[in-house]
Length: 288
Ligand SMILES: O=C(O)c1cc(=O)[nH]c(=O)n1[C@@H]1O[C@H](COP(=O)(O)O)[C@@H](O)[C@H]1O
View 1 (cartoon, helix red, strand yellow):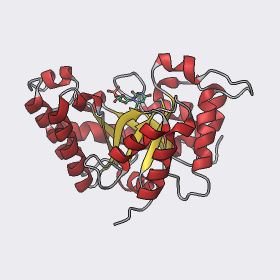
View 2 (cartoon, protein in one colour):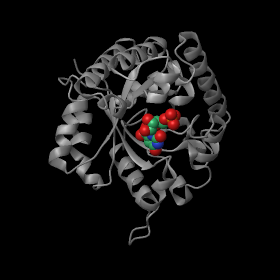
View 3 (tube, protein in one colour):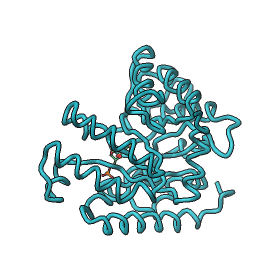
View 4 (cartoon, helix red, strand yellow):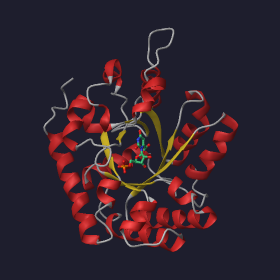
């Protein structure tokens, strides 16, 4: 079965479920707060609880691979199950793996997450372009073929990102703006939105500089940083301007800290989703 392009599926999910992405980040400290052991059983129970609470209602779930890799092959098995169960319940799965390597190795990462035959097959994956945007080509091509998506780190939510991402090339363009340019070209002619997204932190306030004018990539903008990193839904219009209509805000710890109670996880996700809806609806899509 061939999937519709990821951008089509994502826009539909955003319209139907609201644009929120909830991260599945089983930090050791969260396992402890939930009364779970820091072992494979704790990981499995934490993950199953989040998936059961949210996969039938949020647009996107974003498992953070690092927290599963930490437990070796049994952690990966929990991740595989979470991906399958989440997709089965109707959530799109964005695998947060932030892979990036030379093209020939990138092809193997692409096969891991974007080949429908893979046990970790996901709807989209995060990648790092800092070996050069062109090194991502195998992932971009496989995503196009398999109806999946790729999210490229452009302006990350952490303060250390600026030294790389705001660096200016000989032609005057910043590194981040260059990534956004590449993505715009990748998404050209796609409707209602392309499958190739950028990661732009919700924490960046007014500090995007010239890159803010480059956010119109005709693709999704994953915006982590709401909740534990200090940003709020109300910050989104200032950071993104009219591009806020393409933003998929991510909250991980801000929701997860309400577990293990299922109802509390759900109402927290609903609250964030309502706040995002309200902030986004206040922005005129035609505004600059
Ligand atoms: O790609 C990401 O998701 C990401 C990019 C970024 O710039 N900043 C960022 O925090 N993330 C991820 O988003 C999640 C944020 O988690 P919380 O701070 O708990 O909401 C983590 O899984 C991060 O790895």
